[in-house]
Image (cartoon, rainbow, N blue to C red):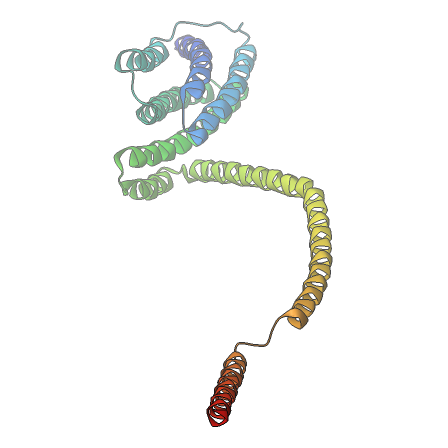
Length: 295
């Protein structure tokens, strides 16, 4: 009976050793095809985690005195081929592919969680405590990844359908996690997402600060040039103002009387003309009278 249990544990280790290699390769492809930045970063991050899980499985083999060996995992092969077939045949748009990829990765995590839980129980019953500890570390990482992927799948699904149900789904995720004892994994996933968002904001702030610091000397130089130009223009404006004032004064001295005085001048001229006409008429009458008297 113990030998049967040992063989079953070794079968599970070989099966998961093959599955983790397949999943690590698939995660790289899924990260390259994902359009959502948070989802792609999560895939890349879990790919590195999966490589660490592969090393722990190798330590499990050594703890049992066995050599690491892969055995074809039909379950992992089916999950990966399902994703590849959907992408190849359906050719979905980028948002639809993001939702499908998150759901496909979540299926993988649940598959791994079930497999590790069964192997941990066998390792503890066989008193292979070293192997059990390595498997428990892998299980915790898979639970954290599942919680993160579940929230990502709900968020992306809400964005795809234009629904606000994603918030209710996130709350339900916390409730399920608290009932199943996996709330720590959910908290780690939330912390990782928040930390990633903060890091991106800090990087963006540093880039903006660097751009502003590089543009300060140019701004100062432009301000100095502008002030010099304004000073020069004001000086030239004052000089031109003085010149124009002098010209105006000289022109004013040369100009005739103002329009208000012109009617009076015209009246004087008219009066003078009438007087001259009257005088000439009087002179002519006097001349005619003298001529008549002489006759």
